[in-house]
Length: 532
Image (cartoon, rainbow, N blue to C red; front, side, top):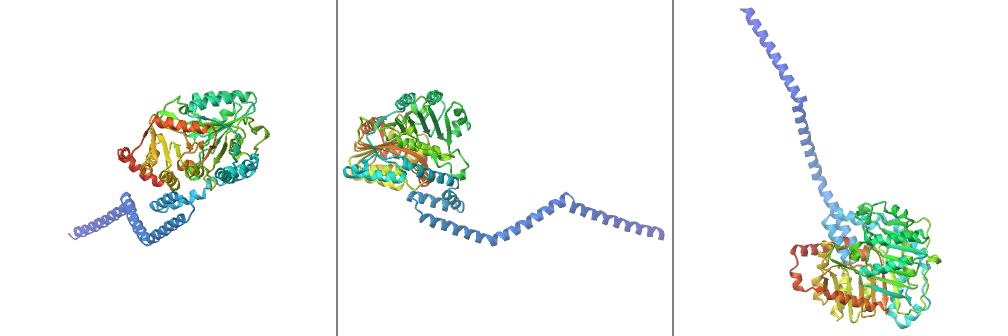
């Protein structure tokens, strides 16, 4: 009996030990098995989150305060900059709506890291080449006595970019792309010494195919042929290696500023110029690029209305120099106005004054806008304008309104079928204010108007590449021909009247019926227009 009891106690003890060991193993399995690891991770996450919250609770006030001070400092800095009112407001809105990021973006854009080298090279190039544009004798002195306003304007363009005024040139205006194209082909066929071409857009098709064949033939004949186009073409129009394909035909070819990353700001400084120079005998400029829609071989936005101007005489030298300056940006050894490039004076033509000029976004002079403003401010009877876009800064808006209020007939023709809907919405956001001031707005009913034309009082006109928007006036390389008392001015005004008769006059009632969403979009984008 005692043995049985003793054995039972021993068995009980063993069971307890076994149970204890089993329990320990269970605990160990729980601690070091999958469940234990999961629990440990969860506990660690809880501890980490608690510590993060405790850290942020002490740091956030400091971070918020720092961000607030930085934003306020940037706003004060922008307010004391030399930006125009609209640009200033756009940046202040961006900096305040995007605290921190907006200020950093402003610093990156203003420091312009991607263009420091370009600015330096261009300054050197302009300094090297300016003296090679020789002004005609006595023209400035005569103007000082007979036309002080024009004398003063030419003084400005000479100081801003070295562009002199010329007397005795011959001009021919082309009111549609098809006519300009035929004239270009005719002049290209006559080339014996050189052909320089600089265009914003080149697209393969009928127009470019015909031009390229002539260029290739001329290169085989020993004519010096150079072609330059803007780097944005490689986005959708031409392959990256297209210059090599053209070079294989004996044509010197390069892209201006191939696209770089966003932060380099290369998206801004585009070569929007359109220049063709043949043998120093003729130069063309205007709105026409080298693609089929510009001559209505292809319809994209209804009928495409565009214009161009051809000039002959010593004034061609200025367009030749503009081309050579841009061509030399990435050249190791730079060459400018050799004797074979120089234009000869015309013997028989004496039809007023012409002033070819270029505009660069890399200096502080907004030459294009200043010349447009000069025309508006000097107008006595009328100012007639054709432009594809109407995105105005405060100064230009005030000048147009004031001209209308003092009795000048101010008319502007824009597209009825837009190429960019958001830009079109911005353009229309200015209509009501302008119309209320007496400016008359027309939209070209058949389609898209791409012409960039000013004409005033039957006396002065500009035909070129410069749109009435921030991109052209602030951010792009542009060019144009200013004319005073030339025979082409009457043709420009006639073309404006003909175009107006095919356009519809916009009224305040029309504006009320515009799409509400697009009106709201236009008003919102209007604030940020200088940055777009």
